[in-house]
Length: 252
Image (cartoon, rainbow, N blue to C red; front, side, top):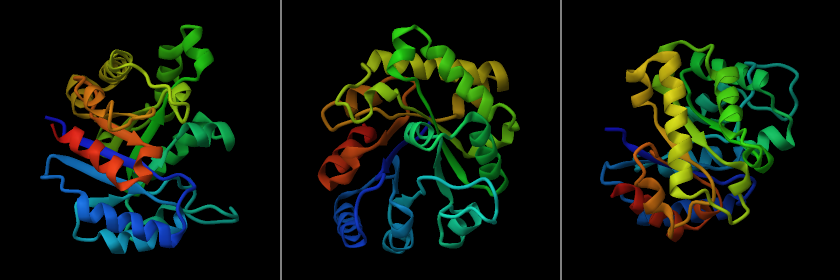
C-alpha cells in the first residue's frame, strides 16, 4: 500500500514573517494520523526557519530546486550539500515553470536527478505536457520522453527516493483541472512506462502525485483514483485551511 503524499509548493510567495505565520497555522491544524506524508517547499531564504519550526512535527520541508554541481561559479544557485547542511533532504526537480521560464532541459534535469541520487535526496520529479501537446495527441509521447531522458539512466535503487509528479501544464494556475479520469489515465501510463523499464515490482511502489489545480473541492475524487498517490499543490497550499482540507482528503 503506497502512502499518499501531499506536498505544498509555495513558489515565489511568502516573506519570512508570512512563512512563519503560515507554518504556525499548519502546525495547529495538520494531523496526518500517520496516513499521509506532508511536505512544504518554501523559498530558499525561508528554508532554515521552516526546518526549525517543523522539527518533531508531521510536516517535512523540501526545496523547490537545486543545482547539479557541488560548488562553483554559479551565481544565485544552491547545491545539494547546502540544502542537506540545513536539514533539507527533499527537492522538487523539473517543475514546468523551471522548464519554461529558466530553460531547464532534459539533459540538465538528468544531471540534477543523478546528483539527488548521489546525495541521497528525495527527488520529487515533475513531468507534464503543454496544452498544444495534448491537443495534438502527443501527451503520452511527451511525458514518456521526459521520463526516459531524465530518469532512465538511473539504477533501480535510485527509485527508493524518487516520487513522480504529473502536472499537466495547461492545468497549472489556470483554474482548469484534468478530470479524475484524465489524471488516472496518465498516472497509469507513467506506471506502465516504469514497469517496462524497471519491472512491475518497482513500478508498483513508486508514488505518482497529481499537480494541476488541486483544491479542497476536487481533491478527494482525484486522490481516489487507483494510480494517484497524492498531490503536488500550488496555490491552495498558501492557505492553511485549504491545504489542511486537501491533506484530510488524502487520508481517506
